[in-house]
Length: 135
Image 1 (cartoon, rainbow, N blue to C red):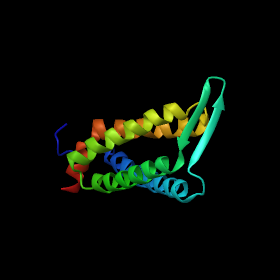
Image 2 (image 1 turned 30 degrees about the vertical axis):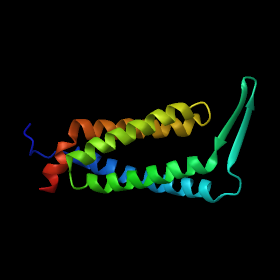
Image 3 (image 1 turned 90 degrees about the vertical axis):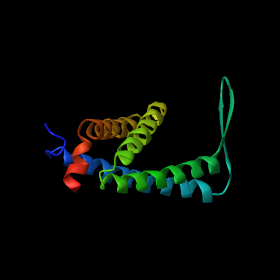
Image 4 (image 1 turned 120 degrees about the vertical axis):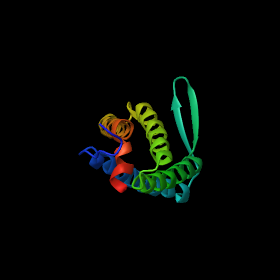
């Protein structure tokens, strides 16, 4: 297969871009909710101790991460190599965070983890086709 041959997998590349844009929008909403909600700390007591969690810091992280996801998702439609590499890195970070959330939200984490794996596969194996389809 040459670099310019376009197969049906290019649709999966576009799917990856759309998923990144939607995930970014959801992250921005979650982030803004956390930033503007009253109270800036969340406490979790367990047998081992006390965990203090800064909700506003978490909110800013998600808002900034969401903007990055949207920008990279839009850039994927151009077929740029830097956008594919950045998208794979961001989705890998998201997949790792979903593994940490698995005990708290098992079904949602498994769904998002599956989407992350599909996005990473589509972009690593058939990502060059995005550029070829754009040309």
